[in-house]
Image (cartoon, rainbow, N blue to C red):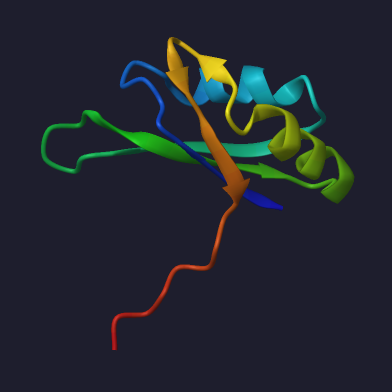
Length: 84
């Protein structure tokens, strides 16, 4: 399952995100989205977990949780819309 993680502190990186989600199961990939010009984090990212039950437990327990003094928004990522 691909999980959206929003409202992250700008200093949070992929390893930080992986460490948080590994408490719930195996993480196959993490990405923190950054501005292509400044390189600064945009404050959100994505986590991919292979086990559906573990991913759902992570969403249920981490959505609204505080991390680095920010309240995270965690939910199943929606597919990117095409701009036609």
